[in-house]
Amino acid sequence: MRLVIPIVATLALAACEYGPPTYDSPRDTRISPPSGEVRPREPRIVPPSNDQQPRRRPPRGPRNGPSDDPDACGASRYQHLVGERLPEPFPARGVVRIFRTGDPVTMDHSPSRLNVETERRRDRIVRIFCG
Image (tube, rainbow, N blue to C red; front, top):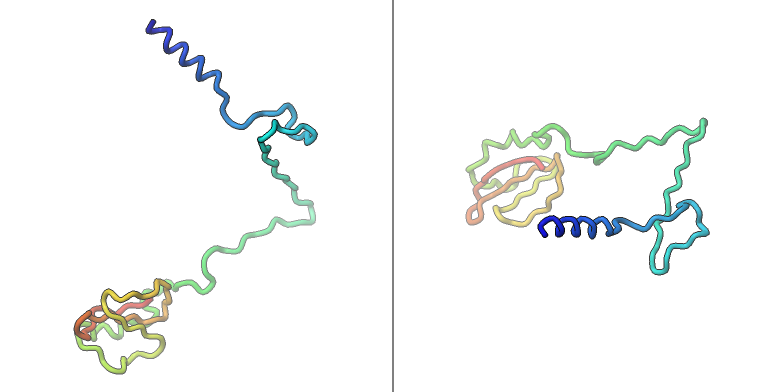
């Protein structure tokens, strides 16, 4: 009896059909699949002729992507202000984003933008960074 159960289970699994139904001639379009089933189309592969060069893909990534310089905005020049009160106006040129800790800010990265993070209750500078 112990031997009968594994044999019956193996035969039952072997009788199951896996995958899509197969046809005698997959390229013959005159044969229609059984009703209710859709046969996927085969991709058409066209080899390039001698006068055609294979197309090269452009490099991935943004064209004006982030620079490799971690100090592209000049944040190192303003590190002496960390822990001090926020000066009005802020002495930096260019784009400066001033926000309080916990404020919602956009997640876009701009290497030339100077970010100044201040404390929530007081206007003391917590950190200065690029991005």
